Structures are given as C-alpha cells and as structure tokens.
Image 1: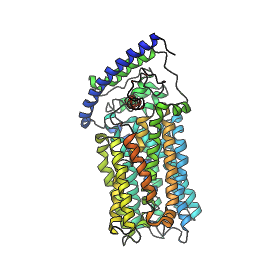
Image 2: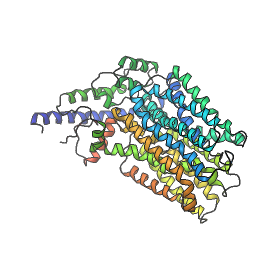
Image 3: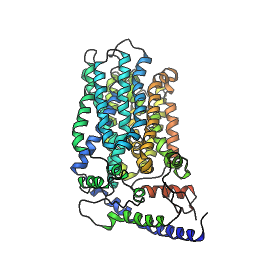
Image 4: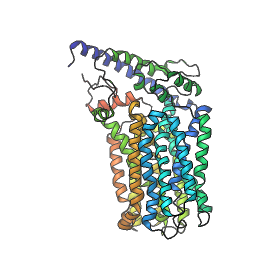
Amino acid sequence: VRDDGDRGGLLGAARAKDIKTDQRRCISNNNNNNMARATITCPLASAVSVAILPTFLFGYNTGCLNALESVVFSGHTTAQWAAAVSSFCLGGIVGARYAGPIADVRGRRWALLGIGWVYIAAGIMHFLVYNMAMLIVARVLVGVAGGASTVLTPMYLGEISPLAIRGSIGTMTQVSVVFGILASILLALPYATESEWRIIFLPIPAIGLLQIFPGAFFLPESPRWLRLKGKELEARATVDRFSGTISTLGVNESEADDGSGMEMIPGDGSTSSERFADEEDESEASENEEQSPSIAEQKPFRDFCLDPRNRIPIISSLLFPIAQQLSGVNAVFYYSNMFFEGVIDDPIIGTLAAFAINVLATLFALPLVDRVGRKTLLCWSAGGMFVCCILLTLALLEILPNSMAVVAVLIYISFFELGLGSIPFFLVSELIDPEYFGRMQSLAMTTNWLCNFLVGMCFPFMVKHLGSFSFVPFAAALLVAFVYAIVWLPETRGKSLDEVMADIERRRTGGRQAVALSPNEDASFV
C-alpha cells in the first residue's frame, strides 16, 4: 500500500513520462523518415554473413532429402523415410532447448562457433551412412545443430542490429534458410542418383568449416551479452568496431533502465538530439524510478511468465513460431516431390519452381519488414495462406482445374515468406526483456521444432487418410494465427521494448494510465 507522498511522486513521474512519450513519437517519425540513410559497415556485414551460415545449413538440411527418396537405400518403407525426415526435427528440439541457456552462460559467439563443429561431424556421418538406421542417427545430429541455429542466429542478429533496419537484418535469417533450401534441390538435380547421392551431403561439413575459421576473426561477441555480464569496456570496443552504424545495437530502453550508465557510442561523431533522445528519456525515467519504492528486484523466470502484463508478449512469442510450422509449409518442403506426383509430369521441376519462388518471395519481403510493420505482414501472410489452402483443397477435389493446385502452392509459399517465414524468428527480441530473452527464444524455437516434427512425421499419413483434405488442418491453424494477429498482436516496428509494453498495458487496462511500464516492475495504476 502506497502513501500519498508515494502516489504524488508516481503521478509526477507518469506525467513526465507522457510528455516524453509525445516527444519520442516525433523523434520516431524522424527516424522513420531517415531510415533509408541507415548504412551497414564492413565489420557489421562480415558478422552478419558469418552468423547466417548456420541457418543456411539448417535450410539445406531441410530440403536435401526431398529428391532422394527413390535413390537412397531403395526398398525402405514410408514409415522409415518419414522417420528419416522427421528425426531432423527431433534433434532440432534438443538443439533449440539448450542453445539459449548455453549462449546466456558462454556467450553468443562461443555458441555459434560451437555448432559449426556439430555440423562438421554430422556432415561426415551423412556421407558415410550405410543403412537407414545410421541415416536417422545422422539426421538427429544435424538437427541438433539446426535447432541451435534457429535460436542463436536470430538472437545474435537482433542484438547487433541498428534499430532503423533491425527487421531487415532479422529477415536475413530466413533469407539464408531459403537459399539453403534452394541450394539443396539445385545440387540434387545432377547428383540424385543411386551412385552419387552422397555428394549432396558434402556441403554440410564444408560450410561448417567455413563458419568456424572466418568466424574466429569476423564474429565479435554480442555487445548486449557483454553488457549483461558487466563487461562494459569490451561492449564499448565492439560498438567501436561496428563504426557507429548502430545507435542502440539492440540494447533497448528497458536495458538502459538498470542504471548501469553505459551509453552506446556512435563512431560517426554525431551528437544530434534525435540520435540520443531515447537514451536521455530513459535516463530521466530511470532517475524517477530510482526514487520510487515500488521497483522490484529481477524476477525469476516463472514469475515473469505469470505476470499478467507479460501475457501478450509471451503468447505472441510462442504462437507465431508454432503457426510457422502448423501452416504446413514444411510439408511442401519435405514432400514436394510426393505432392507433385500426378499433378505435373516431372515432380522435381515442381519442387524446383516451389523453392525458387520461396527465394524470390523472401527477397521481395526483405525491405517490407521495416516499412510496413510486423503486425500487418503477419496478417497478410496468415490470411493469404489460409485462402491458398482453401483453393488447393478445391483443386485437389477437382472442383477447380488441376493446374490450380500448383498455382495455389506457389502463392501459398509466397505468402508464407511475406511474414510467417521470417518474423517469428526475431519477434521474441522485440517483445521480451533481455534478461529472459535467451530462455524465451529457446522455448519458442523448441515448440517450433516440435511442431516441425509433427508435420514431418504425420503429413504422409495425412495424405493417405485425408486425401484431398490434407491441407484443411493447416488452414485451421492459419485462421487462428490470422485472428490473433488482428486482435491482439502489438506492432513492434520502430519501437523500443518500453514503448511496446506501454501499448500492451494501455490495451490491457482499457486505457488507464500505467505508471510502471518496465517488464520487471509491478503494475500500478492511477
């Protein structure tokens, strides 16, 4: 219970916060207008290039078995092949589960370099397999590296990205994935034979080596992780290394509230008020909060999850990685040859077309993420895929022409890359407090991989038992994601964590002004 003095202080802080919020909105508009002037220096580009190699291999291993079903150990059953495909996801669950906690303890750089060695071992095992059982074991091992990749690469990119182009750099995760998928089918065209199929697995250890050795020189530690570990001088050195292209380096305002006093140092010598307005606002807010007796200590993860103010961020962080898989897109990537049999004359040409459209749609969506916004793109993505599932079902029922099935699949993939393909990977970094980011990213990607496993394992049996209606369950999942995105998902584009939490709090309380807005504070209302 607060006395009148406490309440008066909180009212003053709230009014000051309102004024600063109005100022921040004006500054945010200026930042949006200047977004096109954001640049990427060589050190930043090098770090991004190395960091996306693991997710390139994740994409490559997603598609590399697609064209090999008829040439690898002929005579295997449908269940054995489904096990080989989906065992990749079982390993992914393990990798995603432990990658975040390991990265929180040892660092993002150490973890990213470590999974390179896993890729090397798994790639060699793939090349040497002599039966289906060994192939399944190799797929589990490479899945561990793939699962860790889906946690570590988005985490690292989110922590080194300039705020103005954070979404575009975050989308590089999906860009690398789709290029990996396309590379797998291109390499399969000449080598998908009974005598040469092992060659398709050679890029796995080769790119693993490429990840490790350049990474030792071009992959600095995340400044956010260094700062959370109290290594402020090293964090400043990393900021200097990126030469001032990053004004916030993924360290949002909630991190500035901890009173550590560290500021991001722009290397271009700019001292404009626009550049530092958010830091100044949060510094003043931090001073006001330090005078308030209501500030709580860092909460345990369980308390963080049970806090009603974090309900929407947590649900959003988990729902869209789940929707990404339950959309059914990996049913196409895993089994496109099976799907196109009987629809077109050469199934591998249909697979190549699907994978090529996948790349083109991703490149088209890349600049839209920071221009249109996450909420809008996710609505269009889920809604468009839902409509395509309906059209595909009608084509399979022969209500529409047979060619419409191919068209619907290609448009379906395009809508996937518009939002659900990339945004779920970095949405956690825009909704969750940095102290809990690693664990929440691991939890989100673990559920993602679990759903990936279910789709990979179950889809052949869905085709067998549901026939033309095999995409109806995916349509239902997409409808849920579409409704949630419209009604509950907050927009995060160009906003700090505090601003996102303030928007959520206003909606949750029906417009009442929330005094304490930090995810680590208890909510108090005037």
